[in-house]
Amino acid sequence: MQSIRARLATLHHFATSARTNRSTHNMADPKSLAAMPPMMYGTAWKKERTADLVYEAIKAGFRGIDTAAMKKHYDEALAAEGIRRAIREGIVSRKDLFVRPSRTHPLTHHHPLTPNKIQTKFSPLDTTSPHDPSTPIPTQITTSVLSSLSHFTFQDQNEQEQEPYIDALLLHSPFPHPQQTLLAWSTLQSYLPSSSNPSRAGKIRSLGISNVFSLELLDALYSSYSASVTSLSPSPSMVIQNRFCASEKAWDRRVRGWCAAKEKEGEGVGVVYQGFWTLTGNRAVCKLYPTRLPCVLVMPRM
Image (cartoon, rainbow, N blue to C red; front, side, top):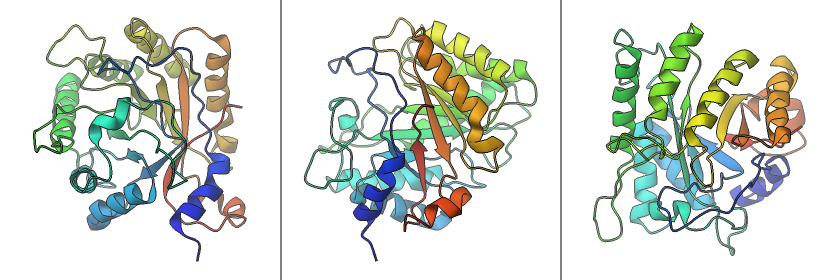
């Protein structure tokens, strides 16, 4: 059986970052954004094994963890526990997130590793999430964000509690109505480093949305996001995360085309497309590559 690193090396053929490096990271700035790892470990459906599997994934070389603040499919608290264990044992450090922007991929044990990245989601209308779906949307967002931040609070090597933050927070899906989605998006933007609210600024480093197919909605979200982060250098990319397989709108061609068009324009902020269900949804392709690793891939542009 192949080792986990060997399987990762095989998958790396698919894992190329779509982000355009338009400026140099200011690593002296604690709010600067790390390069997104080309492959992230997905934690859906791991249930009570989540902490152990996240820990093993970090040991194997993963430096990006994707989770969500919902209990139906994820366990964010256990994902954080797996990260905490790895930090406690000195395998990784949370403060390394933004101090090594140009490193080799995490597939080679003897070389520096890709920066860590913690990515979680807010799930609208979900009854297993920490927020109450019957409350106003800004209240739902605040409740969920505070819950996630409490999970991702870690101690350093001196056992001093570090200020928590989330590298990327995604809307798990749009709300039923576009105006509701835009209100949620606006509330999340108040946690970005550019926020004028000192108690929120920098708690979230970048935003994104998952399970989205409306190009009109994407245009509105992108316009709002660009306006809120253009003052940052570098400006954090917006994340689009969709199911990536032949049966889902021909590998999500329209949305990926939208992402590529935004990158080609060269204006505003960058866009990162993440494909999930990449292995399970592409079994015929995966027969060529013997792996069963669950992951979220940052897909190449078209």
